[in-house]
Length: 442
Image (cartoon, rainbow, N blue to C red):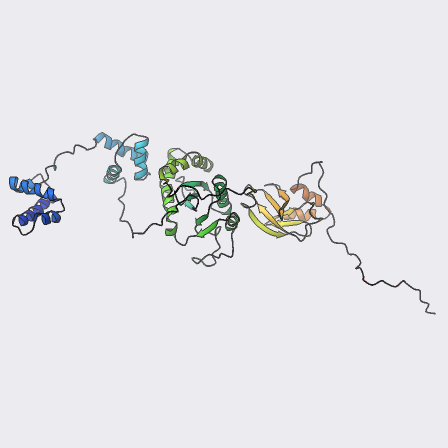
């Protein structure tokens, strides 16, 4: 008995006490098994061993003997060395996958976790918090999409970037993932447009209450549905509902997805020596999104799709930042610090005083629309500044036009009226005037 631990001896004393009570018929053998926490069959075996060997028969015969399924010491050393030298910042699940896929070491996840925790390489996780019931998924793909951004040091240095991701609620499939300098109206519109062009128009989108999604008059309060942002307007034009989330728990599906991204993507970028933003986005598009979906995507509850075909009309006006403006008397409109000159059109002699829509497209170009017509287009560069326009307004209308509007097919600039004011003419009278008669005052 000297080879047994103190805990094993205390366990044997407890079992002996219960057996003695059962032998004395103070409790039944079924009750004894329930007290110890074993089956009735195990209880009968212990009774026979106690009758044959006495107190020593209650000890576990496996104690002090090596397990026939124990892992070789060389394998243990290799696993711990791999984690310390190459995968030191991987989580246990990610590291377990790498052992199987790249090093062909097929050990159970529990063994790997306990080995890393026993070696002090991984901290033991704390107790889980309050139990919450997860919201059921939508039955069809395309019924609800989550969009969110996660700011993180994805390259494990001092640089911070936002990972903008769009995933399906029914399957957790990632439709769009892009690292951007900052989550904004234009980056969000670009992501939504790529999903619409690739998959189709979806039914609803779930997002936080960031300023590019909703207008929230009071911090923490409800959103103002009457005031629409550019993203909200674009989704409304598509017939899609934008749903606000009022807590991180409400966005649990996307939040859990981002925890997975933060625990895997920086390590994948480090192993592949990727340090540039463009190179990282190419890696996301060409390789990692498919790998991520293959590992974490789940089947939808029902077959089919709720995606509708994208509208046949041009999507450029929908996914552009729109500004309504009134044309000045010199046929110009102002956006921020830029002044855009509108050339003469066939629709009207002048557009002065007309309400037009200015579209700032995602590729940097700008266009001006008057109803369904496009009356001007401007490149991403070469737009005249306000000061340049003011210098050219006196007798130099064509000079400003040269910087914004290209030449026509015949190589000449389109005509532009030098004088836009409406000439003052005599008012017609409804009554005939009498002829002038000379009056003699003599």
